[in-house]
Amino acid sequence: MLENCLLDRSFESLGQDFLAGLHQHHLLRAHWADRLGFCKEVGAPLAFNCIKGNGGPVPKTLAGITRIYPILYKERRSALVEGLMCEYERGGNGVHSQNDTDSEEGAKVFKLLETASEPELLMAEMSLEQLTSFTTYKSKFEAAKQIQMEKSVAKALEEAGLSERDVTPFMRIRLVGLTSLSYEGVHNPKEGIVTIWNPTERQRTELTEGKIYIMKGLVPTVSDSETLYLHARGSSSRWEPLSPKASSSFQPFFNPRKPISLSNFGGIPLSSEFDIAAYIVYVGNVYTDVEQKKQWVFVTDGSTQRSRSGEISNSLLAISFSTPSMDDLPTPHISNSLVGSVVGFCNLIKRAKDAKNNMWVGEATENSVYSINAEAAYSSHLKTSSSHIQTWAKLSSFNSVRSLH
Image (tube, rainbow, N blue to C red; front, side):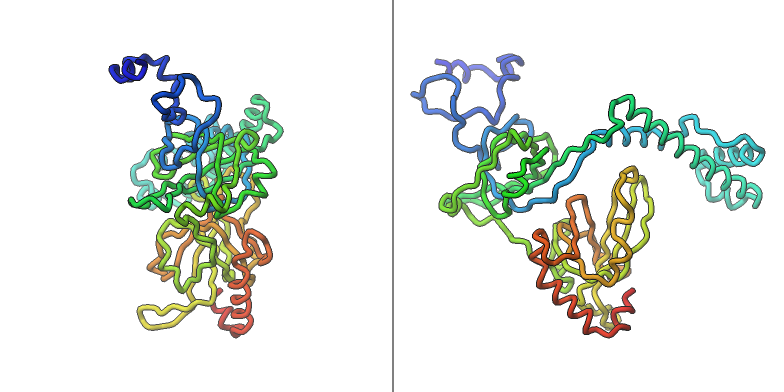
């Protein structure tokens, strides 16, 4: 009777109060003769491919772990600082430089250039005195702006009760949906990334790449991306490893980490992750670009390449590092003292090749890690290639390696 009643009416006609109490992920199939009522136990795991961004909490699901990323830390006051930074970028917020004659002249030139459609042409027509006044005023203006911004940030943090740092650890895990061995259709598993806030010690140490887990307590977020994003609390989520026997009933899903050589770097798809051991050739200076601190690091692994002119040279990889400029992270990201060392890099992203300079390009994200210790657990798969590169560096003549700098 209830089934017929519901089928004869549209879901919209049932009312918003009724619909608000329903979560798509909590609706389970039942046999027609089953007794009506709420389920006391969570049923079979919801297929990972069936999870919807707006479907509500997921009682239970099943997926394989393909990557586990390093522990990161989120500071509560970051959002407040970012908001104030944006506010200051939009305008001077009452910042004034000193009221001397030079500053008044510089302020006029500064405002003129700010509103000009082609400031470069105006600057080309200015006298040396005008340019000097402008440069002096601009440096004083930026210094005053920085001081006032720091005072405002400190005051806002104190008023919000965030004068002391409140840092929350979190970890990200990449998952993939599973396909049964008996399934004869197209194998197109969905990928997802789970962020675990305040992960437990067991989750930090026992979760393993390549294993299948039954997960409870995940909550998806609405996203237009093909990748499913979910979050969970360490204490309230459960990660139970599936037995080897049960795991064998699914198609293989895991590609173990392996070192990439620059000689076959072209075979890696753009925007995909890769791990590499490399000899650091040159470490660039840190610079600021649109509210970000950036740094370029140039590496090689001894692989060679042939240019269009037929000249043979060592393959180079340029790695870009960046962080928000308001971060209190130490700079530079990579110390110049590492030049001449062999370093293992994990979770880098491949970017488009620099065709002009015939150079491969990679990007380090907050999920990327690097280590000079080949014995480190996270980069142990790079141990053999690190040893080969160290041997290459020693056997190569001093001038051959030095010429790369």
